[in-house]
Every structure is written in structure tokens, then in C-alpha cells.
Amino acid sequence: MEKNIRYSYMSHWKDIPYREIPNFRDFYYEDKTNYAYYQSWDQIFKYHAGCGYEGMEVAPWDLFAIRTLFPDLREFRAFAEERGVEISGMFHGMNGGRFKENIPRNVEQTKAAVENVVLLGGKHLNVCPGENYADGGLDEEGILNTIECLNEMGRVCEDNGVKLGVHNEFFCIMNKPNHKRIIEATDPRYVHYCLDTAQVSIIGEDLCKFYDDYHERIVTFHLKDTADPKLPDEIRYAPFPEIQDDGHRWFWELGFGVLDFEGLFTLMKKHGFKGWATVETDGTPDLLASMAYTGYYVRNVLGKIYC
Image (cartoon, rainbow, N blue to C red; front, side):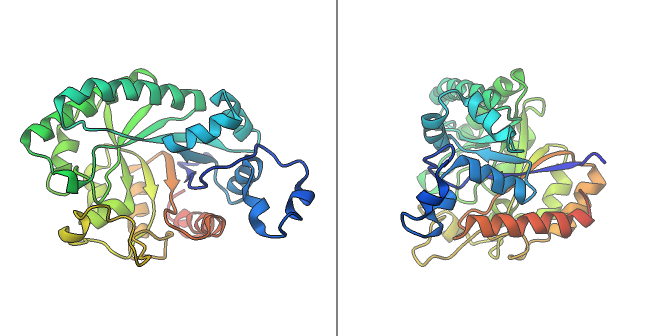
């Protein structure tokens, strides 16, 4: 049976120094810890496939380390696919797009990013549309420039068979006072939406209502939970609020927070969503445990609703 949802996992593995470790037993005996199990892409991709993930989403900060081992990104793609994993897409940032003079630079950076996505075989470029809110919110001119910049970036993506998905962050300048306006004012032919379930809930939106209202624009997801929806502005708009000194986590594995994923998946079934959904376990102390648990959750809990 053809699946409606294909699950990808967001790469938070940081720098992986080896393609494969042919002398694994000897490598292990160097310190007799689990360190050896997280040092090669061969094993990382097999963990993805073993936990039921068909894809991996990468970020631009991964590319230098990847290219050190795979100078041609098509080699990395082939290496992954041999182990049952595709690259679903890549994260990306829009830098200073609220200022008109920065729009051409963002378009050029998008061209380079899309070239990488195409080499990797990905379908999505998920874009954080701006800097931290603490650096200055969006005035009217900034909103109009952001809309223009996203339209131009989205046109580049569409021309190359890639979907640009706007990705909100709870502390960035495209935020609750303006994000719906920007979604609605951008050109739907070129600008789509990547719904990060935790980020949009922390902003203060009702997750299920937001998806129901904007489902036609949403082409992919970052699925993660939170126990802190609707954070007050003084926390969200503070400098660097994502990393807390006391170790408090804004983001949790699916089912470990308070979000209504069963309601969301009921709506996804109603609206007939089809495509990639990336599970993101941002901030976990144990990537493999989180990968295995969320793999179970999407198959055995959410999969009973829609798969």
C-alpha cells in the first residue's frame, strides 16, 4: 500500500568523522565505550533505516563535514540510498531579508542552497525567515521586504523542482504579530510552509487550528513536542532564548509534551496530506533513543490515525 506520509529524521549528529569503520572491533577497544557507534555515516544511516525512517533532513552547517568525506554530494546521496535512506531536504536561513538591499544576496545564497538540495536529491528547502526578534522586530517596510525576499527565493526553488517552506522559530522576527500576514501575502505558487509543531505552538498558536486554517500552504513538517506552549513575550523575545542556562528544554519527543498530535493527524487525514514529515528531536541527550522512540510513536500511535 502506498504511504501518504514518508518520515525523515533531522540530522543533529554533528560532525561524523568516518564514512565507514572497517576495523570496528579494534576501534571499539580503544576506549570500550559507545563512542565508536556514532562515528560513521554507515552506522548513522543504518540507525535511521532500522528505526523506520526513510529520509534524513540536513542543515547547511552539516555540509562542510559531509564534503570532507564526500566531496561530491551525489556520493553522499548514493551512500545513503544504498542503506535505505534518502535526503528529504535541507534547512536554510534568510539573512537580513527585512532590508531591501539584502534581497539580491539572499537570492544568490538560495541558488547555492538549492543546487546542493538538488545534488542530494531533496525536495524541500525549509527557511527560517529572519534573525532573532531581540535584534529588532519587523516594521511595515521590513514586512514588505520580507515578503518580496521570500517570493524571490521561492521562485528560485520552484524553478529547480524544490519547495520553499517558511519555517517559524519562536524567537525570530517573523512572529505572532506578523507571521500570518506574511504567509497570506506571499505568492502561493512559490512560497509554502514547513509547520514546526513545537515552534508554532510556543509562539502562541493553536496547533490544530493553525494547520486547519493553512493546510493548503503546508508542504512538510518538523514534528516535535513541547511542554511550554504559548510562552510569554518576555521569554520569546529575549536574546538567545532557545538555549537555557538551567538546561530547561523547550522541545521534547512526540508524546512527551502536551501537543495534540492525534488531533493534528486526524486533520492531516481529513485534508489528505501527502509528502515528507521530518521528526526533529532537538535538544535530546540521546539521539538514538529518541530516534527509536519516535519511530515507534509515528508507526504505532499516529500511524493508526493516518499513515
